Amino acid sequence: MKNFLYLVLLGLPTVCVGAVMAEPIASPSTTSRLISQTAPQPHLKTSPTLTIADRSPQTPIQNPVEIDEVSGNPVIKSSLPSAIAAPTETQKLLDEIDEQKLNRSNYRDRSNPTTNIPQNKTQPTAQNVTSVSQFSDVRPTDWAFTALQSLVERYGCIAGYPDRTYRGQRAMSRYEFAAGVNACLDKINEIISAGLADKVSKEDLAALQKLQEEFAAELAALRGRVDALEAKTAKLESQQFSTTTKLFGQAIFGLQGRFGNTADLNPRDGVKETRDPAAALTYGYNLQLTLLTQFSDRSYLITGLQSGNLNTGAGFSNAPYFLNDTFTRLGYESDTSNRILLSDLSYRFLVGDKLAVIVGAQGVNPIAVFRGPNRYESAGQGAISAFAQRNPILGLGSTQAGLGIDWQISDRVSLQAVYSAGNGFNSAANPTESGGLFNGSSTIGVQLAMIPVDRLDVTLYYLNAYSTNALLGTGVGDNIIGSLGSRLSTNAFGANLGWRASRHLTLGTWGGYTTTNVLGAGLSGTVETTNWMVYLNMPDLFSQGDLAGIYVGQPPKITSSTISLNGIPALNLPSAISGTGGVFGSQPASTTHVELFYRFRVSNHISITPGILFLLNPVHTSSSDTITVGTLRTTFTF
Image (cartoon, rainbow, N blue to C red; front, top):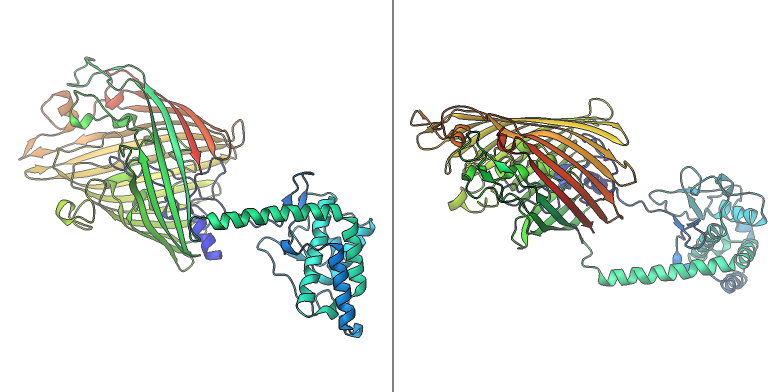
């Protein structure tokens, strides 16, 4: 169980509405991208790994206390729910003792409550209690307390929390007390059934019978509740999909629109001549389903499915291909054309206690493997735009199949590494179209995640990507930096910083730099890009489970382009957009991305997030109108 919990805390997937802060990114109990990135991925083509990254849940604690539906008070769970006995059953036990003619002289020493008495197995979150007086919330004045105290001290029949309390410093309710009586009855019944009836005195059985008579109504209520729970359990067991596989997921519905604007686009000459054709209200969905198949407490298989119809990156109809409007892409988009596609097929397991491994034919890439300091990174629950999800350079290559590891070096330092190949267009399984696993598009990455001081998360990462389609693979900003058909060899460097200033305030930032060699017949030269983001997250701002966010940054921008064709400057996109013959240069301006959103938690499984996005100097052009995008995202988790 310990090993499975480690796998779970390294990233058992979930789609959680609440804004509970995750563990530090470099600690053993953190949610790692190695295990957590199990949900289907919203961008299967242009940006296949912009997906949810919700933190994994803690394994549910087996709570020995339930809340009574009538009184609202805690009720101790019986260790053997079906063994609730009526007073007549106690009399049968008395008769059995008489028939066996027990030798009372063999009864154990009562000063030692554990002598010759079988002990209950301790529950994961409970400790056996040998005296009722150890409970700080039980009054020792009533006769019933004294009677139950005697039984507990002799038979160890009640388990409590390590702090010796039952949910607060107060007296036990009658329902709590009745559950304690039931627990002692179960324990004594076990002893009799095991042939150790000589260890139980008639006096104890008589006291137990009197307690049952006094709390008959409460015991009857408990019995009814247990019967109902057993019936529900039997129904669930008969209807469950699989004993080893669990299904979970999320459905995202988005209502979004762009306000009318005019762009200085083709050519970029200071004259705004092109109206935005995508200035309209749209509605779409993104459905993500995940099947988790557990083979042991150290391994499981993830199968992800996705369907959707939302793609806001329609771009300008009369623009060059490289101006497809990736700047306005939303984080919850999906472009599967309503088809159901496989978004994840990976196997995840532990090697030892500090090394986790992921291998798969789909869903293995830097985003899936690297741990991230933004604890609210999520397509369905976090920021609304694709750019604000994470540093875009983590999507280099848009690769999917490969191998990743996550090594917990110490409590404050971890290391992740990944090799990934293939993408939504060119499969790593097809040697003729993409060169297979090692001769086509691929990405190699390594990340160091650290917690130098409490509440501060730092990640440093390096990636090397090879692309056969002139795409960086960032999915946003200046993504296409070469001519169609050219090949790219890219080195990328990035860093993230996250500071949890308080429970209700998190500050973060990232920066990314890429330098790319453009390869092809007669082609030479390099292209450099930069991007950055500063963000502020405010969880539980006005209500538990809510989340407010403010993000300001610059999408990937070409800062230098020196491509030559047969020794002559050509195909440099910044100058090509401006109609200056493709000479060396950079983008003339910088796009500023401003994003605001507020997530309302409607229930444990429903959230609604209104948001607004401003793009100043869109497409890194100062003479174009500001683009404004409004969104209303509704997320259902199950």
